[in-house]
Image (cartoon, rainbow over all chains, first blue to last red; front, side, top):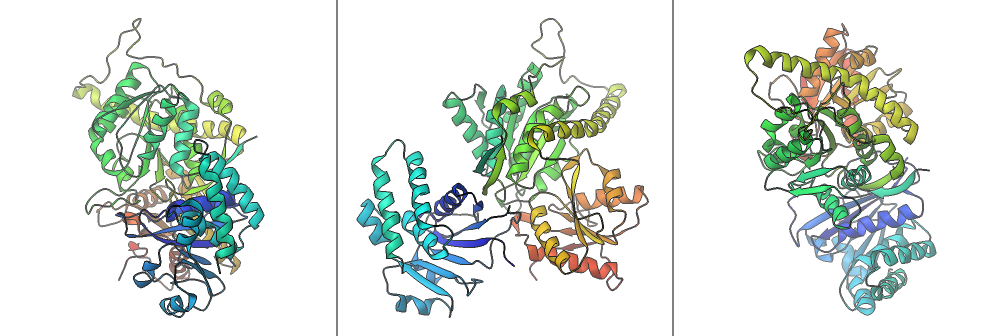
Length: 190
Length: 393
């Protein structure tokens, strides 16, 4: 019996997969849950594959190890599909969310026969449309919240707005764009 | 009312420092402890605290400056990891023999050779004989709680010893988790003001710090350090009892988890203890009587108490996150076994090495150790002197 939802993030150094994992921990915390958000550290450099993790649940979390059998996987950079076994250990009752410009049919052969849920989102399109720059964090965060149903979408948006107001207190002009990125991603992920 | 927050272990220690507002913090950055001085210097730059921050050029200097400040009569601290601690080496012994009540936030990381930035306890275990109090944390909460208790223990007139507050590098230092913070006014009241009896800047009573000790005096100095370490046992428990009143959280020399009726037990320190607890709950659900003894206080070593707590188990595994290259086992294993021998506790014991250089320790790792112990307990397996957890074949 698993008490917590476990999520594994795959990205490349500098893309913000770690930041996204910490943001997810943050927003889940603000809804009253117990959270863990942590990166796997090594000799990191810009562009190298990196992994980050979340445990989220309603009981205190005691385990301090990496996650080998996640419920969900988020892939921030689709080029990783060729070099990293992103579905390794992934629960077939769970799902994978991939940032890609491709169609699902093109992605499926790269997932080693994974039989669980497969969701795609074009985070670049969402980010460019709402922020005018490529920041995949907010779209990927909204996507995993939608796919994992870890919290109510309205609650998620309300909490994120609070969090952005705090985080961007000195540049409030970017709050609306980020909120739009979240909302657009919630409707775009499929 | 406590404050519900989420932060990493490094943030938690930096927050405790902010609440305590010590007088002086010299520091030199090293992964994974760098965030602590970084955050504290931000608090200072923002005018939130008035600690004197001294940027220095090395850890030899950060420890020297911390000692100088402490000897002058200031409440002083620093932070480091791994090779940073190694570079402080000669001064660790001086701080202890000079009886300076300073605090070091140690974020445990493997010593180089080969180079590695991840967690193990080789840095602090190497310093175990330097005369410092050493307390280890399982998670960000304990890192915070231990730090708040540190100065009270260290500055107690019966103790006056430097204090190493240890937490696991990256595993807790960089993991964001829930935490209950204590209001700053309560923390300040608990820690209190520091009014040393003797200090260098006291013009009324001139003194020397760190003089040469000839053979007729050196041994007595060491005996007095040992007495102070023995005194620290009572002070650690007294401070913990007072801390419980403001926090509701209970601390002792070690934590026993389902150890009362346990037939097989793991002895471990740091973040791996929580992972072991989850393994124990799963085994208990299958009717296996597994338990845990998590060492919190390693210096002074609570040998008699540990032996007493383990006397009824059928087999025990002591897990070390550091080598000692005695070729007979690791530091925690050797001391626990010696304590059991002294107390006449004849329990089958195996010493394991785990998590060296950041090797992941999982619920399955803990379960595999308990499976060995079950076989040793029923006599179907001979206990080996030492083994490895998670070693690649």
